[in-house]
Every structure is written in structure tokens, then in C-alpha cells.
Length: 118
Image (cartoon, rainbow, N blue to C red; front, side, top):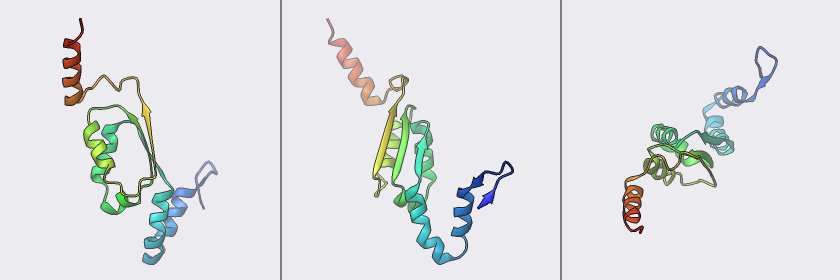
């Protein structure tokens, strides 16, 4: 284990060091490493950016995603979620500002139903 200055073991650094021992260990263990991780995002914008920049290999090994549903790029983020073929667990946390930014479809529906009120 790598020891930080405060004496706490850094298991992530240790795992990454083991992965780089050889190509065969890397190819075998990296998918398991990604599968064991929880990917947490503070908003849909950061999730969309992260998944856009990630390789196909990384996207195919992501199993657990949690994100806060807020931000303007919801459609793009949800489209990227569809590209995760092995997604097993999806946790969506609703933020109080979720309805502050409306999609084009939500704006159309809101305008239509507000006109229908007496």
C-alpha cells in the first residue's frame, strides 16, 4: 500500500500500481476495477462531459452511476447513459432546482397546459 503523509493507506494508488505491472494484468484487472467503482456526478452537465470524453472501453465497463438531476444538458446526459451497455445500478437524486432549466419539450408542454387553465 502507498502511505500518505498522514499515515492513511491509499488503496486506489495501490490498485493502479498493480495494474501497471504487466499488460496481461492490466487487461484482466482493469474491467474489474471499473466495475467495482461508483461513478458520482454533481449534475447532468458533468456526467455528459465525462461520458463524452471517456473511451468505449471505459463506457463498456461502467456498472454503477449516481447523479444529481440538475443542469441544462439533461438530454445529452441521458443519451450518453444509453451508451453504457453493462449499467447495473442507476441512482438519480432529484435536486430542488431540477425544474429551473426546462427542456424544449417541457417548455412546450408547460405553455400548452398553462393556456388551458381557466
